[in-house]
Length: 306
Image (tube, rainbow, N blue to C red; front, side, top):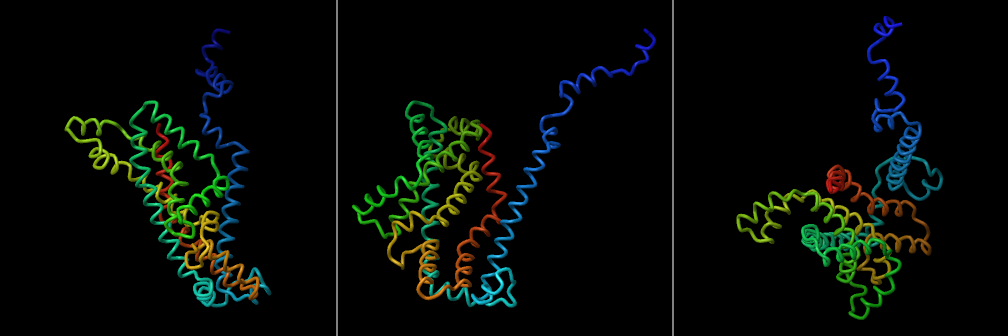
């Protein structure tokens, strides 16, 4: 019996012990073999495929006329006819709406990030009752939906004559976007090391100089992420613009698209022009996301360090 024990494979018992305890395989690797994970990944790729197919179908219909779309909704265009885009651009007033959307999106996004960045830096570097209260205040702002403040916003802007105004819409966009932007940048600034700021303080650099010369260059990834998110949000925003804007010459692209659909109720459905209008609204943000999507993802994950 003792000889058998001596000849037994060394480490046989530890292997069985590892099997029983599960320590031989990391949780991440065990998750790789999970059936539920495989089903989830399959469903995820199915959703991606359906979304891409819907986008391709929308772009294809933008080059077909209404009769062809009604005869064969799943057909493909026989030629690249840009007549639908011309009608959407002229009849639907998309030319003016594009300029309004571009102006509103760029101004509100730049000002939102410019105001939120120093505020977030202060909240991330100073810990007292005031900063904790302000941080809680911004976090509470994340839970307030726009529908709740829609009527008070309209009444307040109407008293200062800022309804039906691009300036008023910009102010609303900045105020509504501030809680999320401050929350995002505060988490990002907290993940940055303090050593360089301490060295700058020893050299006699002021707080503003440290923020401007050292922290901002280090935080350019997070700031760019916040800016891109605001651009996408403000470009596609519909509810506030639809409520606060009444003049056709001040419509943004989503509101102009709704107005274009309402016009077709009386003049006949122009499905080709409608799809062209959808492409005009969606395509710029799609191009930006494809161009900067990886940087956007990196910026969102960098702030999770602390």
